[in-house]
Image (cartoon, rainbow, N blue to C red; front, side, top):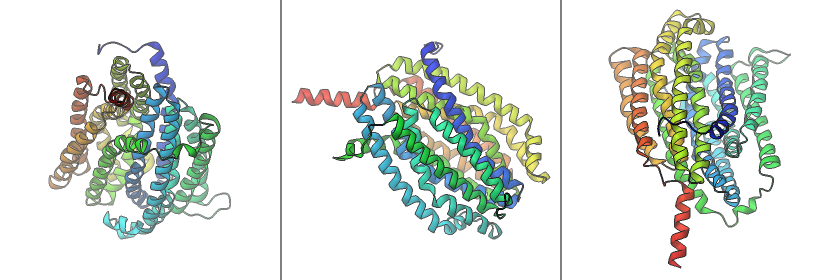
Length: 462
């Protein structure tokens, strides 16, 4: 069965979903990379400060995934089972939850920005620029929280092209805004890092307004908050049951990266800048895996909602092979062009040398990462949410974080040693997740299946 291909219909649905998600994810990554690229022409020190802030913001934004991962999984399964009333309740609960969490998080990031940067031991000369970026982008974090919910709803309804178009517009506006505000063009003042932060936050506000209009104006026109009366606590419980482990796996990864960023600070500003540039470049090696993982998760959610587990099993196998091949090819090309890429970003030979070395090691890392991104997405989609979280918690901290310090600091291997630790972490987890999927222990864990069994038990008892 592992050698079988999914039907042409399933493959067609997969690529109709994955195509727009790929473009949207690429554009989202470009949004952050564009800030880094344009600021690189302003100051290397500014890039280092923004790199630390973005590492912290990435961790915080993953808190919003507690709800959005659950929204995507539950909506996909309920749509597969043709349960529209449940879909509307899930949307309402998710929107309420993420708005509340988003506003609370924004206030925390704004008022505690300086304390967070000091915890990261950021150099005193970088604090002011990091603080300005953190307070503006972090203070408007609630925009991202609500937008992520809307994107999850649209994707689960097979309308992934809407978020893609919105993100495309957001990128165009951000490039124009960055150019105008960072460098002081079109009669505007030169604002540097503050300009980049204002541009990014303004574009997120425009994107959110459009996503709200599309979701409730076109895709879910009959939605009403009356679906929350009485409050569907069972839907919130299911969202958290999926979301806490799923987001926990991502939070664990990002938190380990924050700790590793702290280790990198110990290596000096040049190493921190090289890592920031490298992380932005490497994003493009796994952007296809991210898109394919999300597309596969939605389609597999529909399949298990309709109790078609054999089709789900075959589809994952097909996606796994595709993900590895594409990620590996991109990583090889990126490594081959690494000296040229870094040469465009900085004139510092130390940063260029470290960056080239990292991208060469990264080729092996991307094989494991391709497997992990897909596996975590599809295991969450079928309801097997605890396994990826526990596995990630143990291996990320036991291998990536611990060995980053050992190889990078204790052995004196620097950034190269840290990347060796990352490579071991990704590939160990990849082997574990492949074995889990092949065991088929995930069969029967879907929420539609569990609810159906509970109803049958209740009716028999009555």
